Image (cartoon, rainbow, N blue to C red; front, side, top):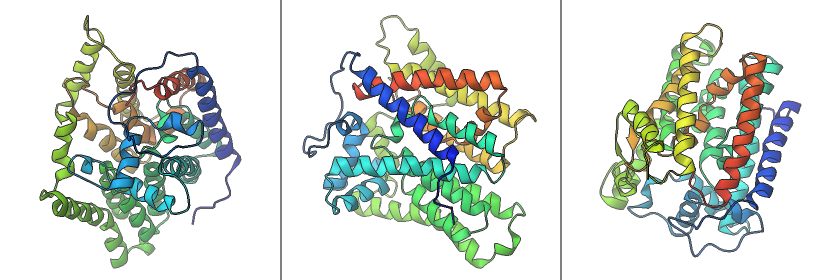
Length: 373
């Protein structure tokens, strides 16, 4: 099992992340407040001061589902986070407080599990630098809000860790949990399959391991059956994306279209549009470098998963936001943190300084209701 006692690297990176969040909350007081847009869960009970600043945008949907269940529109949101919120309310927490506690506990756990996963292949210095890179991603404030990023990171990293150490049932259970947290969780099935056939952990392989590999697809199938019972549509969670304005688009056209929007005279550019372009282009550059350069060392299975997590959302767009939420989706691509950790010293520290400044600014904008993904 993963040792629960955090190392100094875990505490350091989590402290840096938390310090940036607190700094952003101070800065937010000096930024003009944007009027709330989109859906507001008007029945949300009061939460402690400060917590309310992180209940923005999709956080209202997750708390609403936890309170009222699913319908044809909300079926696009996967069930693990609303279920965890609902369960935590039985401990006496309000819905909003429950979601905030869950996601912030998962934020810390994501640093812990990431540390143990990276230490399987990398020395302490590279692991520490990768965690610090993760701590200051411009969109890492989503880990602290009521979004799926934090629990998804914990489930995904734990699944990969247990696959690497030959404990396939744990790997399968966590992969299934990830698949029920976000649609991209099903991509873990391909990583587990690759790890299973890669030649490692031969002694741990058997019929039980094969069954464990199928837990993620089976979990997704169970959610599809729920979709059918609720709506009469086996993949309502896909078709309902149209209610949110999403449609098919080619990746290169979406990237070019988003950049054109930024420079279109008279078009109301929101901060999220600019951030989407920056994150997508830098993530693409990082994945390309990891793929083509022998200087940067990363496990092939991680690279395959990174490309799947990067490319899949690029085929979905809206006319207003061709790279809709891609800056947030890129947060989970953990091989990129290993890439950043292996940059030359000057490049690494340039990333840390620039990304930290952007994180503080983006967090301050987010808590003031600016759209950032």
